[in-house]
Image 1: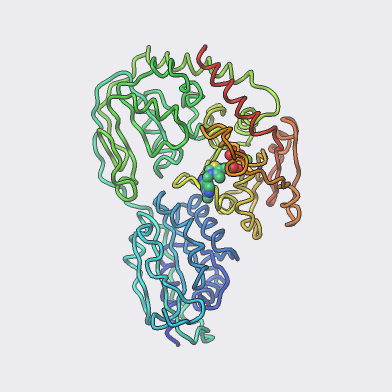
Image 2: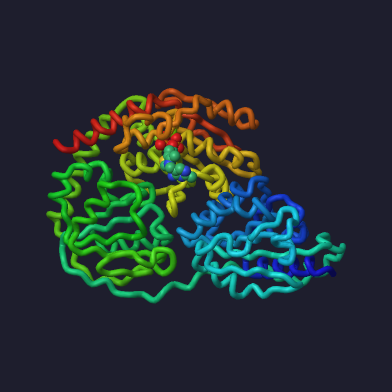
Length: 524
Ligand SMILES: Cc1ncc(C[n+]2csc(CCOP(=O)(O)OP(=O)(O)O)c2C)c(N)n1
Ligand SMILES: [Mg+2]
């Protein structure tokens, strides 16, 4: 057996024996030993292969799979620019401790800097974004260290494959593979959170620092304090619309907490972050402080859910939060018509129980945070590690690959950014809802709004029709222009991949509408 085939088989075997079930492969010659070894294993049902021609999409798809299956997923590509296309998803994985196993094929090291085709410096190309790196040659490689490092984030193995790259016909190596059980990660040492105060608040960042909804819900119940959830679709008992009513400085000043406990990172609303800053004591619970956010500030810091020595919230404190929440809910219930706030509210309420929902960065995730009535019954996902608008279609499809029925809510720019993600759609049921405001609507809500050159460098209108683009790729797509049509589109069972475009009024009108809603908060 040649050295390249041997190395590939040794690696594939150890991956399957570690309990890994899916691999995402992109086509290329240099990675032939790995692609063929994985393919041989797949024909025996030992692993499932997903093929993606665009490596950026491939890596984000793998991230989605990791999110929905809570397992490590390897990605395999050839040498050269293919490797660099993994970089955005590797960064997102690094900032969310996602166990992305990056397997890049390379030419032998002696060919570097010699003018050899498709040969560049791949060693350590992802820098500090990976927890473990090895530049590997030879016929064998023990995977214990890289597999262990996956517990805290992405790992990069650069595999130097010399010719010949094609294997012999032997399949005996497959007979010896024992499929591993999926391992759950050991939890960190449990600390004790001891604070005084009956006016505390618990703030839950969108992806909970990677902690499960169940873990966080259990903690919130024990604590019994008012809960602000960036993801109200995972915490039915959260205070509704906190990010909206806290835009009022007056309300914030009434609701200054004695203690704020933050789980994960809060990245969505200035209003919520301003409230946290007002608390004289701030506690943080976030497993990622052990890796990527090691300089995080906080009066007390925990990398796992602590046991509690806290006081119950006073009835008066809880009543105050409920009062503002209910008043705000009344204002929001009066929002009518075809606008982004109402669309977010309706989507949040209409998605059937048991579905998964991926929400893209920018306005969609903030509109859900603000306008949704808290509920359960869904599994929600987002890329909040670095909040990129790249790779969102692919991540959503990776998520959907692990669920029976999924929805994905994206802005038009996030949609256009990742069109190659739509090329492969095998066995996936996902309805994409695209909020088309012809550009980056969020910028109209930020201070740069209205300055010279705003449309050219921030608004960036494109005039394209996302439904027509998707249709040209053979995807069932249509455009809706009313709440009724939208509701109907959401409530039919999702079969295959389809696209519904909500063509909304101008970004300008949306920003104006939000401003009016925030102004109303000052008088509730
Ligand atoms: C990869 C990447 N490039 C640029 C940005 C900066 N960015 C944040 S939001 C946004 C606009 C997104 O527009 P769209 O998806 O249409 O959502 P909308 O703002 O209209 O709700 C941009 C360009 C980013 N977050 N990620
Ligand atoms: Mg937009």
